[in-house]
Image (cartoon, rainbow, N blue to C red; front, side, top):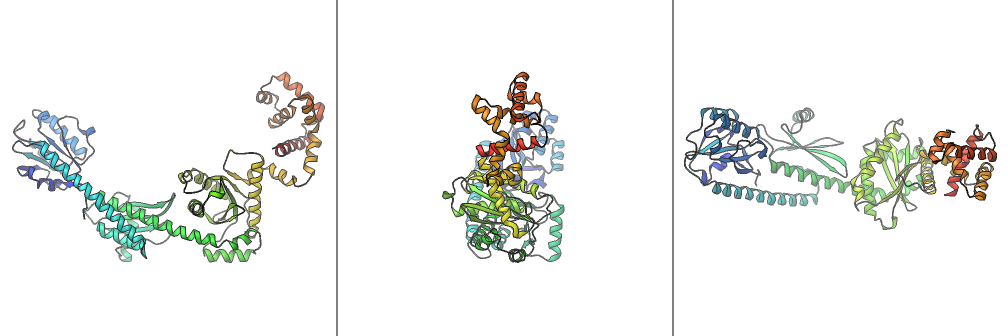
Length: 529
């Protein structure tokens, strides 16, 4: 099995083209990796290199200038080049002692050819070898991926994947879930486990160990860590193995969540009764403890989710949508339950944390949900509106939160508000009272008691005095601001206000008459739409 994506300088020296080559400096750096071979005859090289290149040169540009030669070697070292090969005899007869000393100190290999060589043969040979390495790498990775797919179909696949990764890399593998104990493959003593975990906490990733997040649908499940043996490093190939293993584990965990979500959907009968207020507080708490022994909710909220075309949504799309919701809202301290009723998805959010910031955390979670890229594809259904009911402290009063979420949907539809896909019952303020009053005739009678003179005047004169009244109220009686918003001159506004005084009375801006008129204006807008 190939372990590296590149050659080393030592391996290159064994090639036929290097039979007459001699290492004159930097012997301690012969284990440097070579990812490419580059012919270079310029004085400024730093911006031309990516690192790990073996440089071939005749020395023409520095043959008579030691300072330039030193500058070039320093640039190569700083650029992390693999080494420098120089042809001796054509332009240079020897390598200065200062260059040899610099290369030895930096463990930077310098190789000389004592006779003329064809650089084209060297580059062709080594590039062919590197390409063969990359081809073998792809084949090995494909085989490794197939092996992981096979392990996903077997029992205890998580442990098997960790063991397989450890065998392929020859390294200690640590699987650290977000919630739960870390797993070590191969297993080690408790003392070593504590040492590893302490080291992971203190040591920045990339210095002695490598970490790969196990995540899906914007949710971090765990961390997968490789710990190399002392005095060894993690190769690019090892990194690719780690990445594919993390992806396989994420697929396994996502599958487990999907199965769990499907089971929850089947257990909705009890939730229907809860939604209708048929259970006592004690019975609800007992039910929740059976689900999660640590679940002691501090109140709850109910969200009603309506999709653009509910009939075309499949159960799998709903399930994936709930997986996304669960992953985001659990991070903000909510335990999530769900059920489908009346062609809508009902999401129950049980608050695990303090009540003081529950709305703030809720808004944060919904902002992240609506910004998630998953909503832009067809994996989950397209959202028309999500309505959030009021927060209730008693679990048995969940039906009140559910009813308020439906009320918010109705109010939002009535007002034709399309500015946001996520709406909150508490944000509708006075319209909540108007909604309740629309259930009887008193609201319309109350509204016309205050507005009918203006409404009849507008109908008779084909004017819009009612709009002037509305803007004047919104501007808190500021004539200047009202004139600006209506785009009229002051005299025109004064004439209209005089007419309003004539129709409504000179005291129409005094409290509580003003409050009654403002309420009537909101009621009029609601009933008209």
